[in-house]
Structure formats: structure tokens, C-alpha cells
Image (cartoon, rainbow, N blue to C red; front, side, top):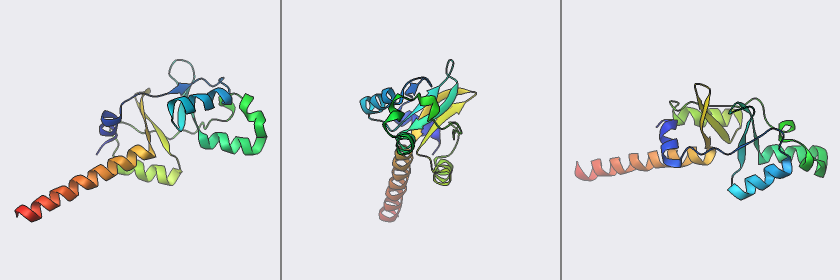
Length: 143
């Protein structure tokens, strides 16, 4: 299964935030949308970084409550792991595990097309395994 199949099932909506938004505003957005990370977009749709709950927690440990007034651009991850729609889900699973990331923006030709979470990947892998199990059962019972 490819990443494009995952996006077909989950949708392509990507929540973004500007680098100058405060961490407090970011937390409100994460709560409102019930999500764990957002893409940080610079001018236009330029991918400036990604910021997750994990980034906030780490900076909170360093700076205390003062982090709430900091701009997102100061706490975001700038070395963003991305994938393309044509990448295989299995390959992305390995990449996410090796790089220890839970959210990966999907980019093609410089355009942000979606975002895939570890939950999306796991759901896709389970669906594939279920399909294979059903095929095997059918083969065994019909064969």
C-alpha cells in the first residue's frame, strides 16, 4: 500500500501554524482539532518545520511556563522528515521508527499534500493484514 492510499482514506487536510504564533495559541489549536502535531508554514505554503506535543513538553521542561509566550518558530523541529504519495507504507513505518517521529508531512514537487501519523500507518498495516487473512481463509475454505 502506498501513502496516496492512506491519504485517500483519511483525507488531505493539514493544519498549519505560522512560526510567529505563540506556543499557547498552538496548544489551543491542538486541543480544538484533537491532533498531536501541526506543520509550521512560512511564506505561502513553505514548510518551515513541524511542531508536536512532544516539542512543547521538552521546551516546558527547559523553560517552564515561559514557553507559553514563546513563538512556535523557537521550539519547532526544522529537520522535518517527509514522504511522497508514492512511498510505500512499510517503508514509512521503518523511517518513522528509525527517526523516532510520529507525524510525517506528505510532499510532492514542493507542495504539501497531507500529513500521515503513526496511527494512520498502523491502521493501514492492520487493514492490509486483515485483507491478507481473509484471502487466506477464503483460499483454505474454498480450495
